Image (spheres, rainbow, N blue to C red):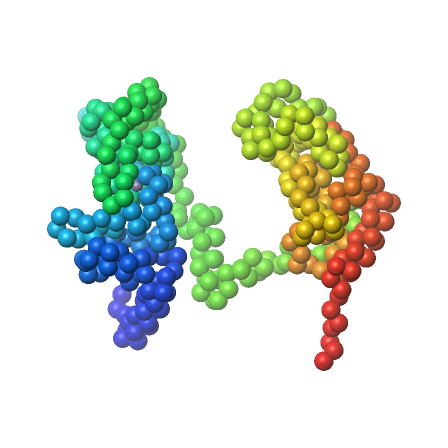
Length: 421
Ligand SMILES: [Zn+2]
Ligand SMILES: [Zn+2]
Ligand SMILES: [Zn+2]
């Protein structure tokens, strides 16, 4: 592409703008950043003698290496040639490359190659599965510690240590390369050796499926892929000046309903079966582990009085779920006028729905924390709870509560007079 003179000028003006941001101190870094100037002075080098990687520039000045936990000030160091190393690099699990190599080897091992380019792409997609971790930015010293530890310990040559594992065997000190705790590195390899063998078997299997053209990958052209279509639209919207408005093009999905109380006229039915012990076990250990472990076994929702077990219900996708939330409720005697209370998922959404209904009646549509207008006790008065089911609502009491809330919201933030000069 031939760029015009004015195009180049525009570009360099844009670069100048970015450089100035970084010079003043931005969420990016660069040879002109305050940190770089500080380091250059401390190590007595010119900024032109800084050996900086792209990843260093892409991270903030207070970035910390996930493997050795050093900050940039402690990572930078002088080389023998007098260069100041400011190097962060991408650490990858080379198992993914191994799939490709093994695919090529197996293809060539056939008397006639039966695989095609799609087989190769299948192998590439499947290779994600045998990688132990996603590509991670770590410091150069940590990245170098990986092959060094592998040699010292004598691991399989295709094995590589993950950032978490590197952090267990490097002995990090400021501004010098790492020493390695060989015993730790060895222990980790021995723990991983068995799984690693399994991964090698999977690599060989994937490669063989691809090399014999027995794979199932059917490529869809890029421009037809959902991800690509959304990305294009976002770029266009950004180009036209507003990314956020893109999501309003199809109409405002959050426009207030005609009847603000319609949401509580639906009657929820209890499920036909209760969750079984294996369902609970799966919730506690896999699907809702964080929420489940957040409260004691004896916990009861303070609003609806349901136990943990009874708060488990079917989601819209027909999966058993358990969630707890900590909304800020109305707490007039509390320090900030709100009180955080741990409640079940259904009490939380009920609090939001009632608070929103009262706000809508007042024409308030931009509130983000609707629970803060009601007390947990008030919520408890309108809840019709049942095990393993969303709450139904006592509509007469809810009518009264909404009226009370409207009054309260008005007192908290009296409506501004409109149209008066
Ligand atoms: Zn590091
Ligand atoms: Zn690498
Ligand atoms: Zn509850």
